[in-house]
Image 1 (spheres, rainbow, N blue to C red):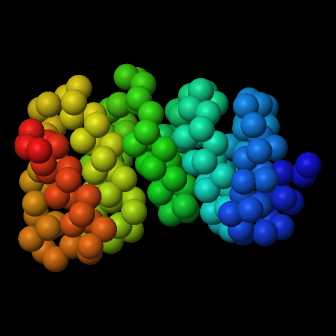
Image 2 (image 1 turned 90 degrees about the horizontal axis):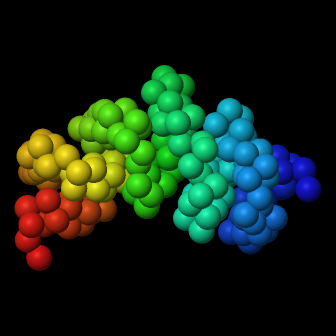
Length: 174
């Protein structure tokens, strides 16, 4: 299978799952997908990002060798929103290695506080930060303040929903 050609052939769930099935648990095939995800043109990256997130959830061990490159890519000025969104989405579901926790926190705080950032990136960042707050309780108050400020300023429904749940978690309420 020509991975890039297959990704471009169709933007459907059926095609995404076909590629996911082809990758399976093969580290080399996943590495090829990651190269496309991190370095190709926008439309290809956008489609590859969905496939990457499905594979990463099903096979988290495959993503580990690529985490540093993914986190590093979040600092690029020209990062496609699909890359940012899906990197942060994946980081919600896996333990962030200690050496990457500082940069991940920095990016997620920046994304969360940026009113121009997409809602998806902001809510995924909120969850990543809440997860990291379990190890670093000193960041809880800053997360709480950011969420409360944005809720007061008329956040979109997706942000309100995740924000309220995250506040309860951070404040130890049920």
